[in-house]
Length: 421
Image (cartoon, rainbow, N blue to C red; front, side):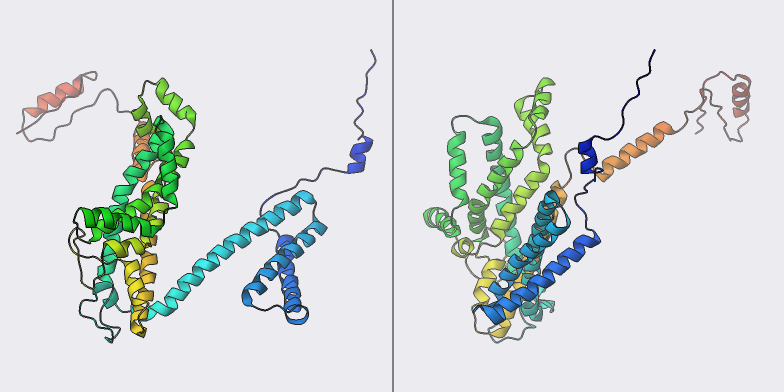
């Protein structure tokens, strides 16, 4: 028998290409950081040269836009010199993503800083959060008056609008995505048309139908109805998209176990889509919390504190800002900017509450559930009690001694419990 030796020498093609190099995507190395910093510095110098020496351009916005475009060009060229095509595309996309996120974060911080600089004069006084404008005139000092009535009005109006729009929006989304039928397409068309509805039209609708036709006075409840008209299509569209993303296998498994359609939707589809539904609610609240024109037409404008949203005019924070920012008094303008800062805080609190209520992933257990499971597992790991338990009764009664003696003499006897009055 002849042994045949296997040829393990590399082929000419493999020898020409060399050893395989593993490419790692993601992460930031020193070379990436040095390339980005060098491209930013070079593009800044080139942008300054073009704006100040060569081209007849001016303006801060154009300067920053040209700097950003030149940075992308310089960064792409520097990356192309060092790595291959796939890494060039990956680095450019990463640069676009990071720069876009930095732009959004910078815009938010700029707005927050602008409001903080102009509104800290009024917001640093405690009376701004504990008083209304009932006894404050135009020339009153900054230590008099506040926005408590507007804060309460915004929270009540937005809470009522959320209470009305969330069940209606989710029910409409379930109907369009799960039930269907001949009316699903008209409902979807109507919802899409209402998504682009101007806010002033919603205010005019509630003003004409609820206030002028049915005789209801201007109040916070009427304003919440106008906000419901604005919030419901946003919640419906977002909730429909989220419900459609639920895997069909979950529905099929529920039907295979004998569950009905409404039980499947209630116990399977909606709990699975809960994080997305909370995001839909947040989007609807973001649309309604800053609306001014429908509130102006339906709730009225007042400087008095009104805790009842069903009777009397009730002001909100957007309407408070719109009223006082137009006045030619410095303290009034400062109160308006402080109200804007407060509105951002109210929105942040509401968003955090919505994320806390629906932020867990599908199937994720709460702290209480995890604690109960761990306690049950610890109890299962605990060694079992012996089959024979001796009863030791500490009693001065002499009648208990024979019982204990009998228990000691009978090792296989069951546990004896002696109860004394």
